[in-house]
Length: 220
Length: 45
Image (cartoon, rainbow over all chains, first blue to last red; front, side):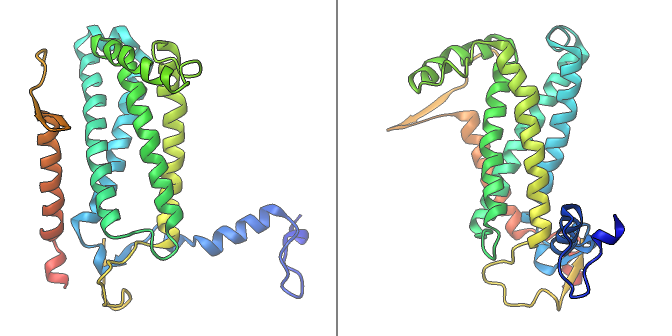
């Protein structure tokens, strides 16, 4: 196995896909980029903190959601500790959306798709869209009067769009399954990809920045 | 919490007061993030 993975005498690429994948990853994302201890000077701004706060809120949302899923609707409706975790889940989502939108504003006004970062930007756009769906199915999964009102109001819009047969907002089991499994899994995978792309391409420099990033760096 | 929120209605714009306050707070937070330096960054520059 080792002999087939080794590069040939002329430096040609290995025929093994694992070796090629390993070489490609090492080239595109070296450990110094993946886990950096220094950042360019322009990263020293609160604007760059919005994304990190969004991830922190996502972690809290997922953890509180896992606890809610284990204990079930009776627990989150009728016990004080259940209502506490229900509130933690609800408010961490509010923080998640507030800081995701602030992160979006910051990156939009910085035109952060510059310098080959369009993939990073588009992954973020998809995360935003899926998060709206996750929040919507979360409201429907609450099993209270608000969720019933939202479901009854939304079904007409979805039926008018021809989606009612596939996405029945009055079906608690379907909405709950989508909310706790499909959409969180998609968001977590895409957020991981988003971070990897940020690490591969680096943080975009401000539009008017003229100072070279390598001359003055600060530890973050 | 059980009473419906108040709404502002101005032409085609219809928005609840809590949502309007939250958007205002976000704009203030964004503006502050642009002008307030991170702790420790001033002495480095």
